Length: 256
Ligand SMILES: Nc1ncnc2c1ncn2[C@@H]1O[C@H](COP(=O)(O)OP(=O)(O)OP(=O)(O)O)[C@@H](O)[C@H]1O
Ligand SMILES: [Mg+2]
Image (tube, rainbow, N blue to C red):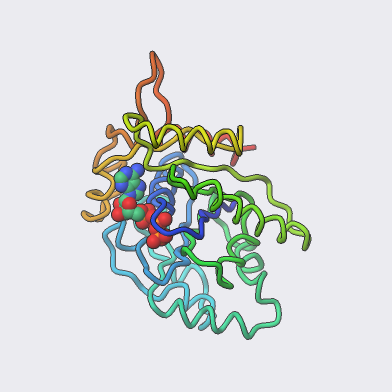
């Protein structure tokens, strides 16, 4: 089992979009996949066109079994949904003895091949739980002036967690909202590559279909599999970036 956390304290950088698109990609590659929504906004259920439920609350506070609270949304793909009751999950965890390793302890005994954690843009107790539970941290970031700073903040938090004895298998940075026609974006992208080198994945193009697909409750694989966000952009003879390439890259990591 391999657990990937989608993290960035900054809002609106593409965490949820990436989580949804990768989770459906992995499940299409015969990986039994679970996507956990750690954000009270509950956008994961919405993205698959199903009602949000207090799944996380029932699992962690009411102590129901994981299999009873997940929703199967596509073949081989389950979600554990959040809603506003996820706020009381945080209060509940804060009062516990082993509060920061709760998710880690609970997930180690589950039977999925891949688990993705979609984190809220905050640094609360669920965020720390998510990082401690994860093998790999995927950091989506917009190519803007604050991007490098935002990524460094997460790496600092990961550093603190490592000092307390948790081993990450690794991390990668995923530039999103990439617009190669805008010099500003290209420059910021180069800054990210300069700062983080080979940890930086090929970028995901800015693409209006992304917002549309979420609004229709469809994944990009269903709504527009040939759109730029999926296929990347043409650079000479090869395609660069796009979620299809990112799924393949991460499958290599997962299969070790
Ligand atoms: N590559 C893209 N091109 C165009 N729009 C995008 C792209 N990726 C995401 N979006 C849109 O941008 C908005 C924010 O994306 P998303 O919800 O994935 O970010 P997030 O990091 O999860 O936000 P939050 O921090 O609030 O949880 C959404 O409306 C989404 O549809
Ligand atoms: Mg989100």
